Image (cartoon, rainbow, N blue to C red):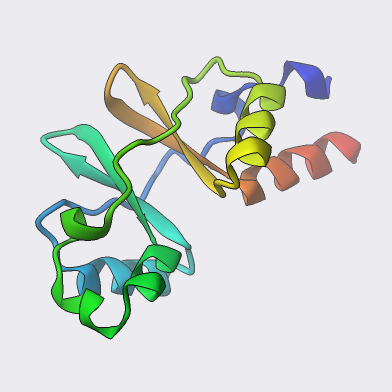
Length: 126
């Protein structure tokens, strides 16, 4: 039943990440190569931020020379593996976020994107 779907049932487990000291240009290249819109930022195994393609665009042409930590969002909404689809969807609807990290403590264990939710709903409807 769709009401029972949890973050762990639909999250991306093999998440592409960036480090805070990486150049924005390197993070952008990762996103382009993987055809994704953003990457979590990890330091010593701990989630510390998220940088998106939109962040880079809004920062302008000089952004590519900056470090990821200079542009990343730090005040993140996160969920755990047992968070229900309804709660994840509410967060996305209220904030406009297109991706939400899934954590255990401060460790990243997955990522929920709008595409994850669409796929989970489509699978349920089949």
